[in-house]
Image (tube, rainbow, N blue to C red; front, side, top):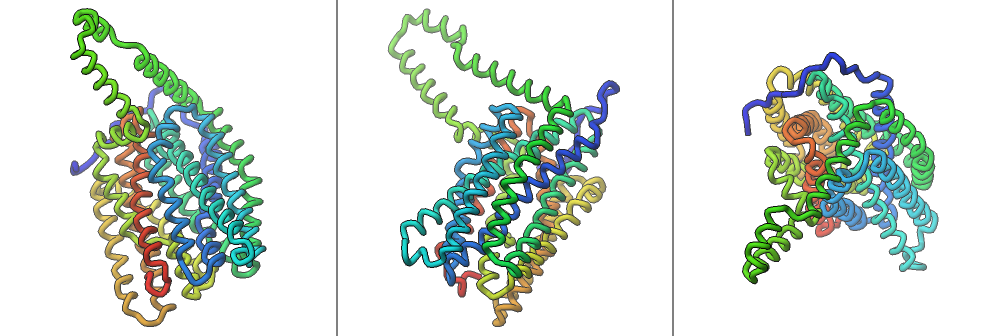
Amino acid sequence: MEESITLTREPLLPEQQQTPSSLINHLYIGHFLARWDARMWEFSVGLYMVNIWPDSLLYAAIYGAVESASIALFGPIIGRWVDKLSYVKVLRLWLVTQNLSFVIAGTAVIVLLVNSSLKFTNFSAFILLSWTINICGGIGVLSTLAGTILIEREWLLVIAEGQPPELLTKMNSVIRRIDLTCKLLAPVITGFIISFVSLKASAITLVLWNTVSVWVEYWLFTSAYNGIPALGQSSQRRMARLSQSDQHKNNPTLEEDSLLSVIGGSSEMVDRKSSKKLCEKISEIPYVAAWKVYLKQEVALPGLALALLFFTVLSFGTLMTANLEWEGIPAYVIGIARGISAAIGIAATVAYPVLQSQISTIRTGLWSVWSQWTCLLPCIAAIWIQSGCLSSYILMGSVAISRLGLWMFDLSLLQQMQDLVPESDRLIVGGVQNSLQSLMDLLAYVMGIVISDPRVSF
């Protein structure tokens, strides 16, 4: 890995005008609403699962495994799909699919909570509703992934093209800050609804919110798209490039035609051509092609380093939330702890641009990952503490503090990917990167399925 990365964006052109801040704000607000949808569901689903089937983390672990496996398997395909469609089509499919999936999953949760005895009176219906939650949740996170790739890996870079490099760093930090703000506030508000009203009320709130917010999100994003000419021009360039690529694939080259005419269709050449076509067909399979593109990038190893954190680092995910609920920690306390964790993450987005400008992107990433690891050391001591509540609070506190280093490390790798990945590959690389991260996340959930007894899980 190189010692430092030099940003090589072109200087601001005299004829290029600054993007109006109001349009950027539309983009930020739309992103906030979309991330709020996902963060509400992410926090709530673990609590729903542990209440639907008490005294076991099995259902929470199965849901987490299905969600992670969805992204691990289909993430590269999502990246290629986003790359092959126009921005407007991706926008529509993303928002409709994400919100509709969460509405259907939330409705299934409401039915299970209202009919709490369903697993005894009609087990087949119980299983059907449970798998509806799992499948719709998986579809929801896949559509969320498509939106994340579109906004973070494409729109921000298009908007910042030709502008001073500090603009992209600033927008990256703001987008990550928005996500962490949702991670802070959504669990707190949802936790208070669950603790002081009911689980049913939180599920109803989730369904109503997603039903209404999708229209506002679409208006905000389309306003930003229509008001920023660079986005429309970039979408047209991508469509033209893909059209030319398709024409090139469909038409045989002149060299092949002339070579076939010279040899007169000999069996050796026919076999060689058939073998070549077979290899080309395999390489054109979306999943294989996406991984080939990813492995050619300079950021493949840093991307693997980030992915490994999803297997090795503790976080307020579905399993930990379900386990804390089993330990007797109130839902609003878990929500506040997640909020504190997100607040520290927000501080990381403020500190990152300052530190990156002083000591380079790579050194900032190295410092961040070591500080994150150091902050997690108290979690080891929590294992030997007999008091369940005390060990849980140590766990929550240590995980929350470690977010400072974790999110700075995440931002440093995101900056490297944006700077080093070519425009034609960045959407595909984004999909594979999220797939790799979810694969590591899946391994953690598999461990949760194997060790589903909460008395020995943590």
